[in-house]
Image (cartoon, rainbow over all chains, first blue to last red; front, side, top):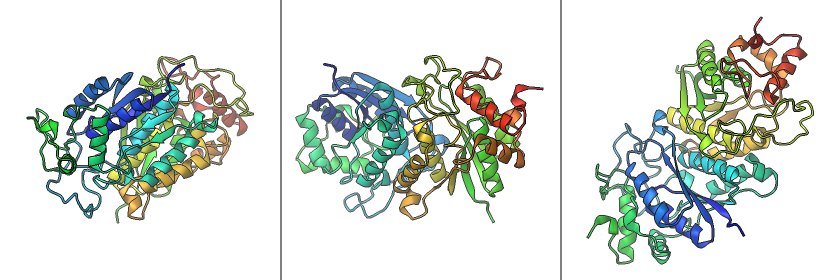
Length: 229
Length: 229
């Protein structure tokens, strides 16, 4: 019997690596999808390739799509500076400048297209609505709206078997995500979460994403392997 | 006072040219958006540039995004042959092989991102649910679902002023679209609708898109200027 197939959005960060590991655990043949979108932290794409191989993805596709042509985010090449030292514990500071307009919508649209073309049943993604940066397109109601859109947008949907969205990390804390990943054999030393790494890929340690990651490891008494020995 | 701004999806075909003309009539400063997605009919992108200039778009951006990496459509380079001679009058033949999985979702997602980054109020697009090829992502319920998604996906939506979708041709016949375009000064000789043109850009005359276009001009007693004198 042929394995069921899933498209797995894979940024090269911590969360999407765990989501891919969950898809593998769930028995899927995994097609991993990454996007070179003009991010200043493009070292994450090298990490994505390593993670895809380590976790046994059947394919890994990197799509080129230069969102920096539109601008509007500090996360993009040529954008403003990435904010540092924000209080990520409270989430009270609103949508930050690192928000890339409609990024998850673009990525999910690409994943939906590949799912339909490749006959995949599901899209796995590592979005999280607990320990996150406050982006609007990481919320459960957003994912439900995208599922409804996909139902109407595709041949599969019209024929009654819409592509499912699987967001297994949605309601986990960062510490719980790290524990789950360790249980599934994820090597977090291969992943990069920093929004503003140095040229050789070392994390800045103070952007939102670094802060959230550091707190997650600390909460379970571990040191982030990405930080070296 | 600064003009309101709209993103206008512009394929280089007949419908999107009229949609852009409507956006201009409605008083918008227009940012035209085209995508080089691996279509075999890439001559339409040259047409899009001519149309954007002729209709006074303030900017025209062509985004490179190779959807042929996913496959799954006869409209893409390397895909199966484009079907010819289908009965487009009845629409009874279901979703054709020229359907590109999730194409409108990808294009709308890109337009949504640019709209948010550029402060545009609306996205204009030339989709039509009357004389069309039977694609699921051209239906009114699909557009409504995308609007709802955009409301949840974006900073603008969260702040209560979501990007509107304007599909002024949705319920017009092809003949009505052509009349509207002529009233608004669209030069249809600049547009290309064919799914499978010759290397020098001449339409095949028998694909779905050519058939629908030819019937539209015939219905109002005109000859398609694209066909030459």
